[in-house]
Image (cartoon, rainbow, N blue to C red; front, side, top):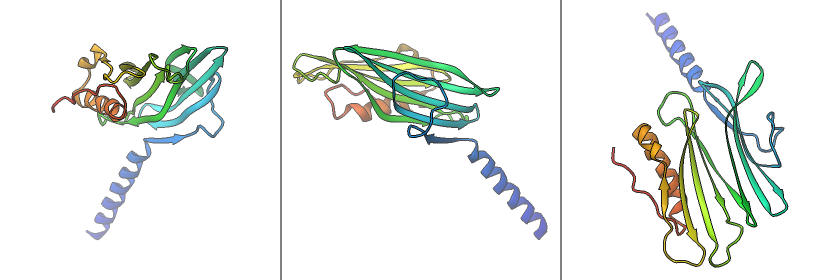
Length: 199
């Protein structure tokens, strides 16, 4: 009986460690990045989940008055890096600011991480009247869902917020998490927050 208990405990411990070892996130911004990118690195991670080994990389490039942002997500397939999705954005005459608040969260408990990140277009010019746009991106099952909000520098009125209609097609806990991510970044700025949906 004691022998059976030991085997059972060992099995449970082995199963536990095998399950938890499937998912991990490591910041690799200070290491050699194994995937192609443009400009200079602003954020980079290696992600391991049930979908395989991935790399998230955000980089920026400045050419003249144009400040460009590139965000890419790769999966390793047969020893090669496959590009799953990418975001490209730019600003002319003002900076694109990438916020290092990137999150990888298994919101729906399927052992695959959802990706959330945020950036701001026009934030380098804080002169009165300039419009600054903040964007929060959720990638759920490799599809993009965006929340956008803008404010005018020097205007005390809170800027409007737009949330993609496609948010209505995803599970409510995922939508709720993304809205919480947005609100956490917006409450200290003059951009409106979004009511969190009820359970």
